[in-house]
Amino acid sequence: MATDFLVAYATKHGTTGEVAEAVAEELKGLGLEVELRELRKVRDLDEYRAVVIGAPLYMGRWHKDARKFLRRHRKALSEHPVAVFALGPLKLTEEDVAGSRKQLDRALALAPELRPATVEVFGGAIDPAKLSFPFNRMEAGDARDWDAIRAWARSLPAELRGPLGQRDGDRPSMAVSDN
Image (cartoon, rainbow, N blue to C red; front, side, top):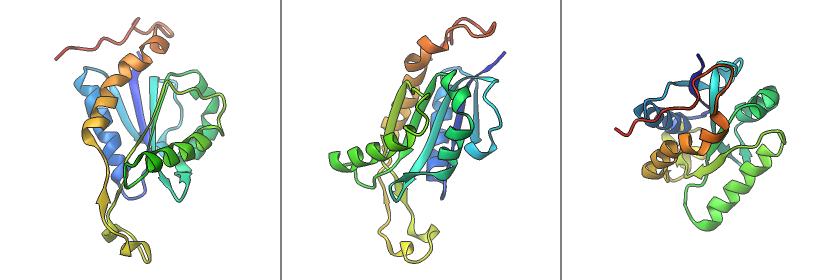
């Protein structure tokens, strides 16, 4: 029997990993089987019914591990329901979010076979104490909206339900408890 969700992420300083953990916990709270893994440690996707990919945007580009993951698994990803998120702007202005979404769309275009059911950009976070010069002189900030992140995670079974369907003898649909 396949695991319901793989939540796979890339992170440079831990903030995207924290978001991936929150997504995985929300899905588990709905009674789903979830595996949380770093993108670079995922070897194949056969044992998963759906895939959530998350990575930060840095200097106009999606994290290199996410880009490599798309290239390496492009065929398998085209056969799975997929959701994608990125952490980007430190300010949630409409212009900053749109700019980050454009960067993410550019990265996703490298795998045209991939047709994510849902794509989301969340605010990013920066802790100058974790950075080297000259970035350690940047102002600290955290634009992650945890309520929005958790709500998005809870929406994933419904967003992906149609494509999840019955696959290779798995259960016919993912049951979501109303707890």
